[in-house]
Image (cartoon, rainbow, N blue to C red; front, side, top):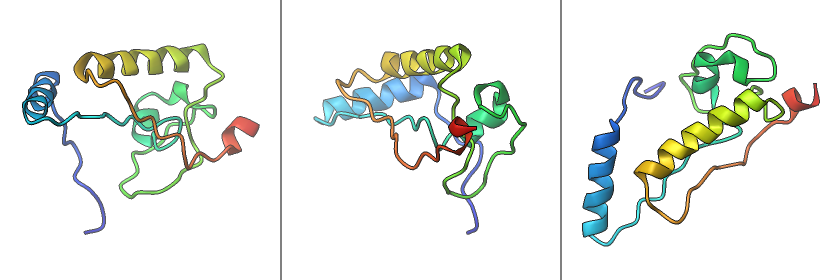
Length: 110
């Protein structure tokens, strides 16, 4: 009630095991990495990837927030390329879902 579980994560090896289990059962795991929005936790850890570069707190509630990845910065693009490379290394799916919806343009306009 009132928020999600914080700190939950899988190791790369656990994810690879999950992908193998799914494959044996005829299921393809399609990863979803939300961008350029729904990234407040990443921006809290790496404020320089946002347009405002303001230190954010990790939001405990779902929502659409003004701060998004600043796609006009080479450092942001390099970060996202690294993240997607890691994801593609773990998930051999032909598809990946990157979200792309619910992105306010407020920070990009300013």
